[in-house]
Length: 541
Image 1 (cartoon, rainbow, N blue to C red):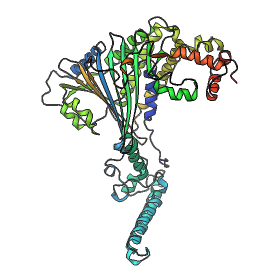
Image 2: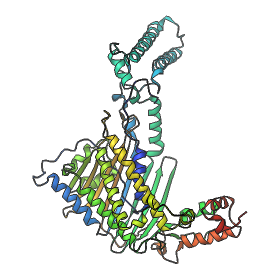
Image 3: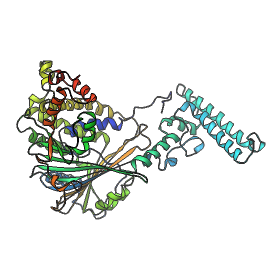
Image 4: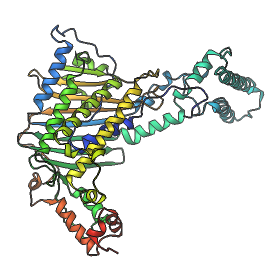
C-alpha cells in the first residue's frame, strides 16, 4: 500500500532478506542441511503429568544430547514441507475494522481515495439493487438510501481532512472510528489482496507438497536424498523427483543426470542424444586444490559452531510440553503431520524471539567462519592479501579452492551486514513479531524421533498474518529391504564408474567440442563469456 502523510514506524525486514542471508552457507558447504525455519504458535499448556525433574535445564540438556547422539547414528529420514497463507484471508472480517464498525476489508490501497471508493462501491451496490428490481435509481423508493450514502461520504471526507490536520495540530478532533481506521490504514487488508491470497492458496499452495527422504550413514561415509515436489489439482497432477547420492569419503555428490539432459542438449550439447539416460552426474567437490582434510574440517567445525551457539542459548527457552497440547497450535498443523507428533513419549519446545533467533544463527555463522579461517588462513580473501594479479585470479576461477574462498568471503560479508541488521531490529517499532519455535519429539531412550519447525513470515504490514511454513522431519531405523531410490532401476541404486558421468571430464570434452567450432549458438555465447575463453576455445565463429 502507498503510505499516507502520517509518519509510520519502520517495519521488520522481509522474509526474503532473512532467507537469502541464511541460505548462503547451507547451499555451499553443508550438503543436505536442515531447513532453517522456526515455529510460531499459541501457548502450549503443560500437562499435569509433568514432573518436577522436567525443568528447563533438563529440557535443554535432553535436546542437546539427542542432537549430538544422532550425528553418530545411521537412520532413515522423511521430510515434508507444507506452505500455507490461509491466515491472510481466514477470519479476516473479525480482524479488520472499517468505518461505522463494519468488519470488512478496506476498498482501496490508497488512503486518500478511501472515501470516494467507498462511496462508489455503495452507490454501485444500490444501482445493482435497483436494476434487479427493474426500477430507476432516482425513484423515491431509494431516496433514503441515496441520502445515507451521501451523508456517509461527506462525513468520511470531513473526518479525513480532520485527520490530516491533526498530524500538525493536536487540538483537531477526529471521530474515534475514523481515527482508528486512518491511523491503521496501511495495516488493513484490501478486498483485492484477499482475493489474490485465496487464488494463490487454491491454485499453488494447497495442491503443492514438497518432500525429501533418504538415509544417513556416517560410518559408511554416505547419505542419500530423494527430493520431490508434487502438484495435485483436480485436472492436473505432476511430480518432479531429484535423486542425490553423497559420498563423504571421496567428496563426491551424484545427481540424476536424466533431469538435466534435455535442457543441456537444447542449450549446450547438441550431440548429447541419450547418453545420459539412466546415468548419474558425478560432481567432485575437491579437485585437489583444497588443503588436505578440508572436507572433514568443514563437518567438524560445523558441528562445533552449532554446539557453541546452542550452549549459549538461555535454558529458559526450553520446556517440556504435553503432546496433546500440540492441537492448540495456531494456525493448525497439517493433519498428516500430527499422528507421529501426538504419539511421542516426550515433546520439548524451544521458543525464541525473532531477534534472538537471528542472533543465534549469526553466532553459529561467526563461530564457523572463525574456526575455518583460523585453521586455513590461506582460504580467507583478506584485502591485505589482494596483491594477486588479474591473471592469477583468472587461472584459479574454476578451482575448488577459488570457489571456497568466494563462499567464505560471502559468509564474512553476511556476518558484517547482519550485525547492523540485528542491531537496528532492537529498536522498538511497536509492531508484534512472531516468535520462533522448534518442537522436538524424543523417545524413552532419549533419541530424537522427529522435529517440527514452523516459520511465519510476516506480511509487509506486519499486522495481518503472512505465509506459514511447516517442516516435519521424522527419523527411523534403516531397513535393508528398502531401496534408497524407489523410482530408479536396481542396477543404478549405487553410483559407480559404469553408470555415471564425471562432470569434470565431460566439461573438458565439451570445451574441446566448442574449440573445434561445434556447438549451439547459445553455447558459443556462453563459453565465450567465460574467463580465458579465447585461450581455451580459440575461435568458435
